[in-house]
Image 1: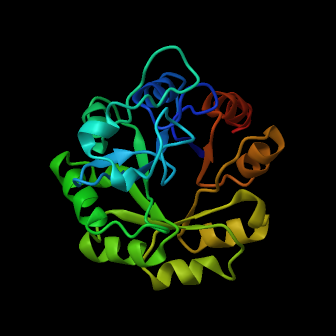
Image 2 (image 1 turned 60 degrees about the vertical axis):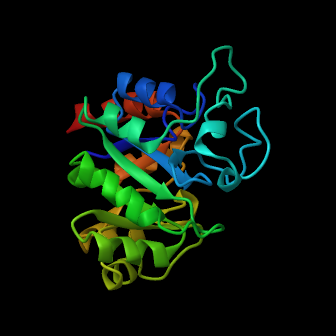
Length: 242
């Protein structure tokens, strides 16, 4: 049955990429999380999507220019009433150690080449013994390959904005066990053929009911969605048929 990954946590209802958003995703029954990591000026791995803090916090500037101490002062719950700090990946892993959720970590190094990001993330995965529950993804496919070379036991999956010809061949060539395509760019026959060739397919960001149903009908490996609760309720219809 198709797994449901909560995109930046339960981001449709809670501040994205916060511990609150992750906890709420677990509460509604998500199978996994999708989150994004970058490095502060002093090398701390923090969980935030944009290269700048402006959209999601009350601060201004690039993540890379903040010290860990200063970035922790920001409020990542910009539209809410309760302050939520930008979490560290270590905090998230401490919490993941209390449950069985899978976790897709997107390395946000396509625009800013964070030196040592892959090594730091992999070292933390090892520290918490989470290798079997983690997927490393990125739009920077050089980083995907580098991650595989550093840790061939940790699953990797390149991200795609555009359609790609025979993605199973490409994935096999870079030793990736999955692909994470934009859901609107991958047709049904490419999804099924990719899975038939042993490559997991986890499209993003699947929010509309019709799009979720399309992928559930295909028994797609997973969907990445802002609405995990809605996706779970729709999936139940398919579980009853099985």
